[in-house]
Image (tube, rainbow, N blue to C red; front, side, top):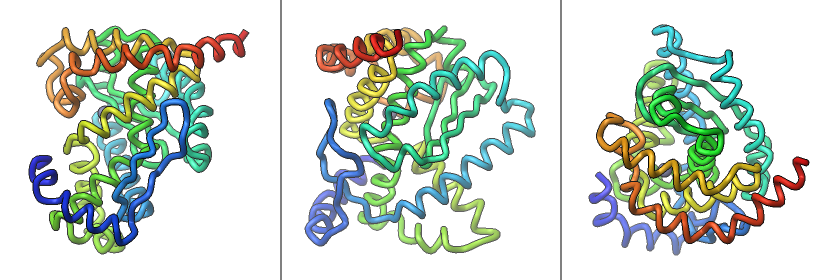
Length: 273
Ligand SMILES: [Zn+2]
């Protein structure tokens, strides 16, 4: 699917960019990217379909008795979210007003995601199988929040639309009733199942590292996190590893970024004292 996009859509994307719809979803920061993005699909459509999927995911998990919204494990991840969210304004002001929420789903899956409007999902398999430290949970959260801040799902949908693979996002979202399931399914398949491009992943690594450092979490945890992911190999089942580049590939890049974010981490620790 990704190959289809990159071969077929790029010239068209370039042409569309000339006509207008390109912008950057975030402002500059220490690690900030100024890459222009193809954003043909409206933010409203993406938000609406993402919210529908999030509601459906949670209803399904609740039915199976797997939805966790309280207790010590939840509180631990929630505390990390509370420290991360105030930092999102570094990248975009409007994200400070998103309705940030966290759910844990009690499944073995090694995965986590953040959907539009700040809806964060962590699977307990990720935390337990990798025995994540708070710093490592912050590294995953920072990475996933950054996909949302950079509107990578909206960009993926726009690329699909430009390639003629997605013709009716706006129309489908506008419909009600029976269309709801389809739209929620569409959001899931594009947001969660279709891998982000390598460039998007690199951005999420950069932004995520800055976010966690600014929140006072050790940015070196991004490296130990990927070491743990690498050791897990295929044992994690479908999830994070199936939609992300090989852990080994990002270790060198994350190591090279450390000097830029280390002062932010030190400053955050000073402020906390
Ligand atoms: Zn990612």
